[in-house]
Image 1: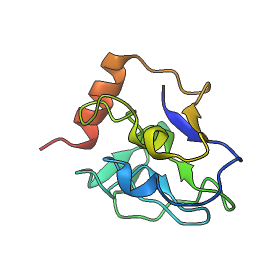
Image 2: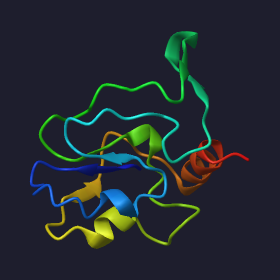
Image 3: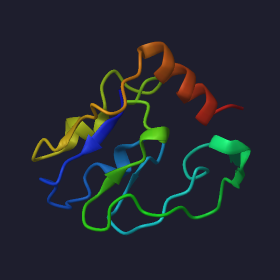
Length: 115
């Protein structure tokens, strides 16, 4: 499963630099598929192709947030999610809406960082 940041976030920013996929963004900040990955373009539902550098709408305006489609729970990099490990208020938690197996997370990591 992916990790999410709850509304208990104090906006300290400790989590953001720890993410190997650059899946964590400050509230209100636009995100990109390519940031922190090797993706140059992404095909989304419906067949639309998006440039990896194209800014995407922020998921939260108020708190730091995690782009679930870029979160691999640090599989392929670390033994545990680093955002949760450094969060001083324990607001980086499992996202019940995004359940993925270790194999799915590893496949996502390989897709995000294909060489």
